[in-house]
Length: 86
Image 1 (cartoon, rainbow, N blue to C red):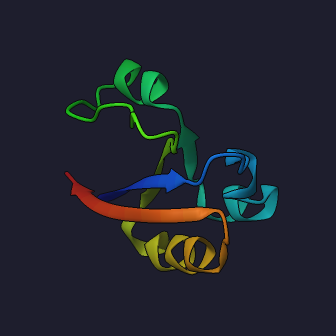
Image 2 (cartoon, helix red, strand yellow; image 1 turned 45 degrees about the vertical axis):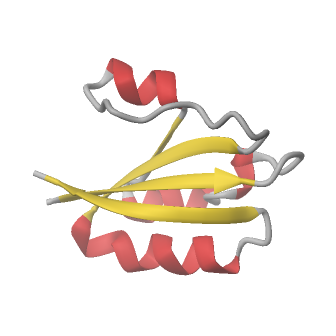
C-alpha cells in the first residue's frame, strides 16, 4: 500500500522544506510536482489557482506517520490530504 500526500504550501514557502534528505533516504519518500506525478500515473488533481504551491509526496504506508509528523511541524504547510493507493 502506498500513501500519497497532497500538500499545499503558502505562497513564498519552498517545497524543498517539506522533506530533509535524511527523511527522504530513510523512508524512500518521493517529492513530486503535479507534472511529475502525472508522468508516473497519478491523475485527477489540478494546480491551485490561489497562489498556493502543490506538491505530492508518495511513501510506503509503513512510513506515512513519519511524513505526517514532518508536515504537521512545517509552518509553510497550509493543508494536506492523504490518499491510499494500491
